[in-house]
Image (tube, rainbow, N blue to C red; front, top):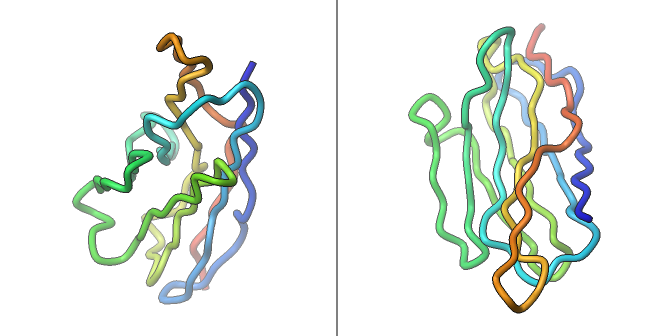
Length: 120
């Protein structure tokens, strides 16, 4: 019913910048939240989330460097990665919790992931 498609990953130098995008498509009535997690190489850890109303939450290691934003009209979430470090290297996964009708039915899931490598 809902698909998440990520883009924007790649190779970035330490201290550079990179922007990840994730667009949700399908039967979307409203967005509860969207966010990003990363996995390298074992556990998948939450990086940042944003509600449809714009409230944000970040893991401590990225505070002050990464910014999450949302375009509700386009059902798209962005992760602006500023001053990335080698330890930020991971596969980044988009996640979303959305309402799919006006009766409160919800969908939650992950995107396919996009690789981010921070290296000089």
